[in-house]
Every structure is written in structure tokens, then in C-alpha cells.
Image 1 (tube, one colour):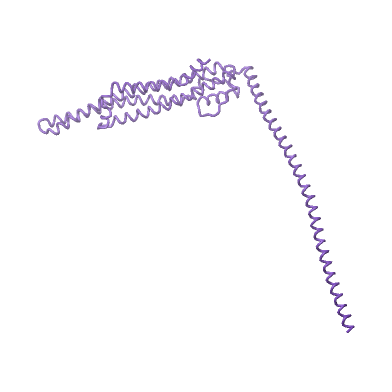
Image 2 (cartoon, helix red, strand yellow):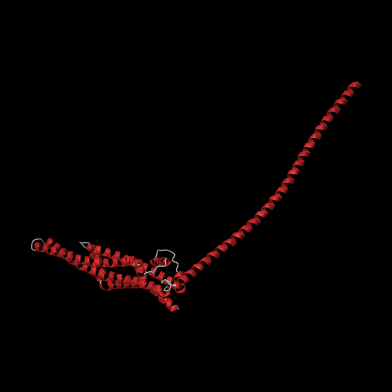
Length: 339
């Protein structure tokens, strides 16, 4: 089992490993064979600048190829993961999360066709979903062919510069030494342009980019084979309109409905518990309010009693004041009569 998982894991990264291996090989060969050719020095002095065009297109093709290899590797990982799910639960267990990957889009489309009780054309569906990757891989190959053509164009331009320089040198022979040397330098530069453009076009386009295109084509084909295997081995009974597929789909729907019912029952239980807790808290709140009402009534009675007490005190004081005032006047009147 561990060995099988290791092989599956290695197949997922096969395209990326081949791409990196070929890139390392190309760099090693360059350093071994072409390091003494002073390529970069010539590119700085190239009068036609066609070598810059060749190098720019090569870097663009290289970037496209590397990005495509990363995408293919990611798709292969997704295919292996969904294949493991299909091996255990067949097609109903595959629930693609989104449609950002071609593998997930393939299974979304496949389940959509089967949900309408249709007969899917698996090969055509795979070809449609992987068409974008095929176009990018073909673009890398086209860039490689274009580099070869630019190399031939550079050869013609270089030979033209060479003939122009030789013509100038022959015209200046025996008359103008400076012009003769200038013509020879132009002729040598033209020969360098013819040589380097042919070298760059044939190696970068005819060899390196073409091998990269073959690697990406192989990765796309392996991805297609993986999807076909998943459908033919693990999802065969689900891809044909049979009674077994309908029963399996019905069982899957029943299981899904049971899960929804269990979720609803749990939600009802939680709601019931929350309502009971709310009733308990409301009851406690009513008890607190009743207690507060009784305390408020007692407090109002005490306040009223204190008010009446103060009022009674004031009345007594007023009566005493009136009584003292009457008694005082009577005493003073009696004293005046005696005298």
C-alpha cells in the first residue's frame, strides 16, 4: 500500500520533475559546450538585434511552459485525490468544491449529465476540459518553430551584412585603409549574426522548447488517462443508466436526507433547550419583580407613615403655640384687673 501511494505521488509530479530535469540538462550542456562562445558579449554588440528578439521569445515560451507544468501538476494531484475518493465511495462521494481546476469541472459536468439521466461521452468531456492546456502546450511548440524561423532570417540578415561589408572593403582596397577595416569589421559582424542566430534558433526553439512542449503534452495525456481510469474502473456503474445506478443514487439521496434530518433534529433540540432556559430566566425575573413590588409597597407605607408623623408633630406644635398664646393673654388681663 505504501509503495502504491509512493508511485501515485510520483506520477502526480512526473511532468514537473521531467521539466526541471530537462532544464538542468540544457543548462549543463550550455556550460559544457557553449560557454566559450561569448554569446552574451556578441548579443550586446549585435547590430541587427535579432538575437534579442530570439532570446525574448524564448524566455516567454519558457515562462508559459513552466506555468503550464505547474498547472498540470496541480491538476494531477487533484485527480489522484478525487480518484481515492471514487475508489471508496464511487461517483456520488465526489463533491467538487469549486470550478477553478479542470478536473473538478470535469466531475461537475459529469454529475450534471448523469443527474439528467443522460449518457456522457467521457472522452469528449475530458478533451473539452483539457483543451486550454492543449492550446498552451501547442503555443510553446509554435514559439519554438518561430525561433527556428527567426534563426534562418537572422542567417540571411547576417549574410547580407557580410556581403555589404565585403563590398565596402573591396571598394576601399588600396584607397582608404580606415574604410577597408570598417568593411571587414562589418563583414565579420554579419558572419557572427548569421552563426549565432542559427545557433540560438535551432537550439532554443528546435530542441529546448520542443522538448518542453513534449513534456507538457505527456503530462496532459497522463492526466487524461487518469480521469478515464477513474471513470472506467471506479465510476463505471454510475456512468451507465442502470437500475443499480438509480438505486445507488437513491441511497445517496436518502443518506443526504437523513443527515439533513439529523441536523434539523439537533437544531430543534437546541432551540427547545434555549426556550426552556429562557422560560427559567423569565420566571426568575418575575420573582425578582414581585419581590421588588413588595419592597416598594412597604417602602411607600413607611414613607407615608413618616409623612403623617411629621404632619401630626406640626399640628401639635401649632396647637401648643396657640394655647400658650391664649393663656398668656389671659394671665396678663387678670394681672391688669388687680392693679
